[in-house]
Length: 148
Image (tube, rainbow, N blue to C red):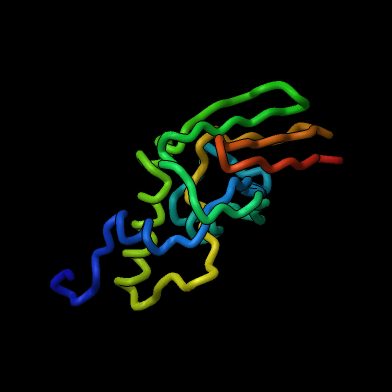
C-alpha cells in the first residue's frame, strides 16, 4: 500500500487476475493527422485514435507472453515480426500500470473488461484493398480485409 492508502499491484497479482488472453488487432483512425504537430494531450484526449479492436479466440491458459512472436502478413507476405517483450518488456507491464493508475483514482478494472496492451509489431496503415493476417505463437490469429 502507498502512503495514500491505495494498493500498488505487482505484475504477478495482475497475471493472477487475468482470465484469458487473445491475439488482437487495434483498428486505428488517425484522421490524417499531422505527425510533426502531435502532442501527448491530443493523443490522450483522442484515446490514441482507437476505432475498435478485432479479437481472436480467447485462451484461459497461455505461455509467457514476453517470449511469443507476433507476425503480420499483407496479401500473404510477411511484413513484420515482433515479440511480446517489445511492449515495455512484457504486455502485462502496461496492464499493471493501468490497474495501478485506476486504483489510485478510485476506479478499477472489472471482470469482463478487455484491455489492449500494446502492439508487438509496427503499426501499419493500409493503402488500398489488402488482406491481413496477424498471428501470435500458440494464441492463434486474426484475419481481416480492407475492401476500399
